[in-house]
Length: 307
Image (tube, rainbow, N blue to C red):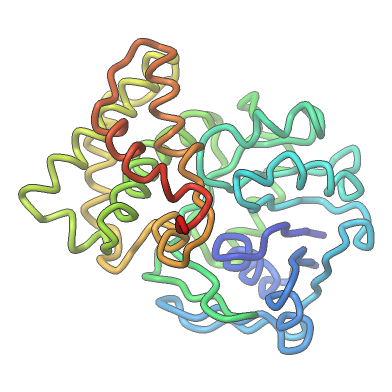
């Protein structure tokens, strides 16, 4: 199976390396020092699951040089969705599946007018990993899961084939017939965890048991659930219990990628995470006081550390 990974950071690099080791023909689309390191030394993933070293690594900054592939793992930052969608058009043939694995909930929706409804699937990535040096990705903990599916809920041959490859690669994979629900279940936790770990500048393990901080998490989770239900998303009755269980068992050292970006002075995905919760709440008439405060306090850092 031919796979292209655009955005070879913690998500794209982590899953892409595992798929390459399982025998897939994987090409990474990257740039700068990370690309140069992958081409000269290969891509290394280290952390709780051990070490994976893909040598040689197929990597380029030119999607046109790859040709049509079976699957595109679409892992760029949320502000790059439209431009990256245009750039990967040469990779997309009649049966190509483009699986967005970004944070947030609207990447697939934004790609549809660019790539067409047949190409775009829905996807959820659950992994705590980031680039720690050019050509090196460090994963926190061992949890590594991908959930994906056709937007219409059907089980397609291409999805079944990709599922088999993912299972061969050794990470947890699920082919879902309710991918929008899965996207929202991740969004409930991520939109909250991203803002909280960023604003507090702390790992999740230092926050979740604090008796003054834990109620803030719970209130923020509840706001996203209320927004989702007002939007007509079919969330399970025990959505809050599931989110709390995941939150309670996440690796103590975990920080959301937005928190890492803030520490590094980089641009934040805040408008598509907490900011999206606030915007949808206003649109739907659902109060989001907790997320409104978190968003307001982080807003000065959206474009990176202020001068």
